Length: 407
Image 1 (spheres, rainbow, N blue to C red):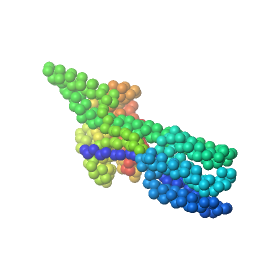
Image 2 (cartoon, rainbow, N blue to C red; image 1 turned 90 degrees about the horizontal axis):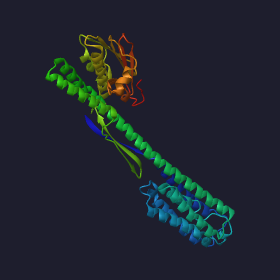
Image 3 (cartoon, rainbow, N blue to C red; image 1 turned 90 degrees about the vertical axis):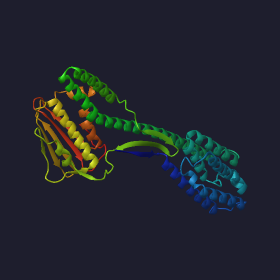
């Protein structure tokens, strides 16, 4: 079996950075057009041209800086905000009437891009700091606060703080989701290990206990010790004390969840004939009915389904008795494969499965239902006391992951 590391990267805020990049370019174009098509000429046009040239070069040269939180450094934010504040304060110098007319400043709404960068980088507190400086610069530029100036300043202040708060909530949600995925991965790993242990170690310990009790003498003591170890191991498996192999972390680009998956088949894309895996169970007490054509499934899915069938037959041998008869029926449907395992034993008393799971006996819960759940299929168990037990296993030919549910 090969271990494969799978990396899942999540970033709710990354689309906001892309939107900010587009916003800065569009507002740059708007500021240039606004200056070129204004009703009257500037008193000092060279001031306007010089500032817009600097702002344009800076905006285009620093587009990679607003591509994400990692590249948007504190130094960049400081210089960017300084350019915006300088443009606001230079507006009266370029146009003497700017103090007395509620017209746009030289950078116009481009200034909001600087404030939004603060919000995306540091949250609402950084946004409040930057928008407060912009508000102060606008008041100084006007000489006294007017209604329109107050309206524009308040709009930028509220919008930037709101966006900063949304970013903080998004980051907290990413961390919560990363933790949830880590727990889910750990649970799936525990179930996989528990299935393997049940199908191998626990079965051997149970057999040693039965044979030792039957032989007596020193073998009986060995059987007793094997029984104690079986109980201890079942308790350990059912309690979930299995080390995880998953690590979640936070980066500037969002939350990252690394999972180490165990690939049961390195050539997972190859197909396998399920009949060849199930035919070995056929014997004097197990009848096997199969279609005339190959029943093709992905190799990993076929092996897991065969292991579930093997677990069902183990239950027949243990609980239905050595003389019980079992039947395996394979049905190849267009979109799924159905395998039915039926026996003529005494059946399962009502509530016995829940009791067994509570005792750490996880044959049905993990070796059967757990495997089918991982394949996106279902496992349905029907048992009537005195009339035997039937287990119906359904696996989709195209894996649906965890879409299926085990009943």
